[in-house]
Amino acid sequence: AQTVTQSQPEMSVQEAETVTLSCTYDTSENNYYLFWYKQPPSRQMILVIRQEAYKQQNATENRFSVNFQKAAKSFSLKISDSQLGDTAMYFCAFILYNFNKFYFGSGTKLNVKP
Amino acid sequence: GAVVSQHPSRVICKSGTSVKIECRSLDFQATTMFWYRQFPKKSLMLMATSNEGSKATYEQGVEKDKFLINHASLTLSTLTVTSAHPEDSSFYICSARGGTLSNQPQHFGDGTRLSIL
Image (cartoon, rainbow over all chains, first blue to last red; front, side, top):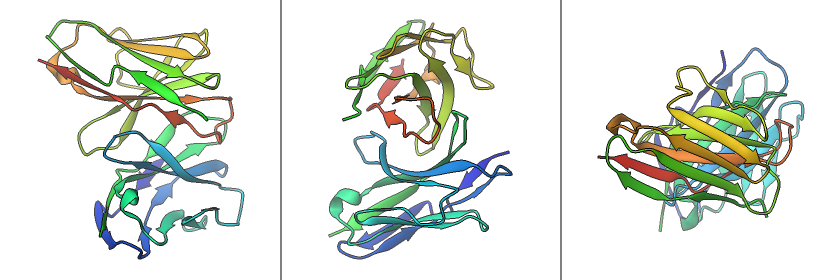
């Protein structure tokens, strides 16, 4: 069975500071893809960053970067220089290679304070 | 690019009514579309996957006759909640993927809040 665990239901960070959201997953498969999505109050899901499991190099996207530890099945998201617009619910997800189904974590609510 | 439009954004209707939700990919052809349901403060639950021109694949526990999905073209999929009841009240989100590879991101619509009185 595939599972995704986000152990931090809610986090707060001061504007301009750095915050790390944790995510662990479980699968017996070797080929998969990992994603972080954000869902702001407007409710639209927006892709933040993605990582192919076969790549050792951690993905980065401007202020967003991941720490992917395949052996530990860990996929944390680091947000640098946090901005008020980063306030949102963040979902970690993965999808198996050649399959359609996303496995989502329960989400972490991030509140960026001015 | 990769815009997905979902309509309507909010529906309030009486119990027993059937409600249709549309999901359109505006600037790309969506080979595959997905329908999710999200309960308050919960994660997204995949309901079904639809490929253009073929029958939808439903997840375990999702009633096919209750949630009718049609994917008649590469830019439009519809979800019809038939004979809706208060327990069907939820936030429904569609997503669309341009290709068939699982590493290609799904682009999400804005969601539809369905409230059954």
